[in-house]
Length: 235
Image (cartoon, rainbow, N blue to C red):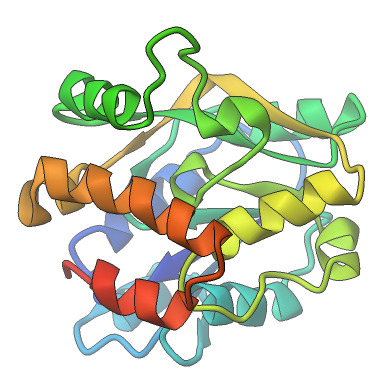
């Protein structure tokens, strides 16, 4: 069962060697290809990926656009969408394969932040009023990019890929997976480790507040274009 790992990148020269190295070291018994989808980086992101022997797909900046373009060239049975600032355990792909063979068609991973995890998670609990029910969105089958979304390629294609919107494309895909009755799972272990860089650059409270409000505003129909401008880019 071939897996295509798709790295979404834009000006990530500091992180590309690390994530590519972790993907190449995966203890996986079947075929595995790695694609980096770049959104017009002005640094050495593309050259570093090419020098590492990674296929690069060039396109316009925007996670949904970039991931959809990469998916068109992917040859794997499973698509695994990841960010450059993630840290993966050695058997991450093996666990994806295992759960797909069990009948699940998509899912994501539990995650922890490499630094300030307790503080960030506590803020999330407080701002979402999860005082009695501690479950996160991912426990309800709603996955975001930092969960490391994986999906069977045929399912991804049937759903038309990610919606062409500048933000909340991951949330939208999760809702369509649920609406169409596809089986999804949250993999508790191994966890994906993610960088807290937005929290440290933009502010802990501001970042968590934006995450909560963007979801609420999106649900009532506020334009994703406006939400993306408000959210901004910390790179």
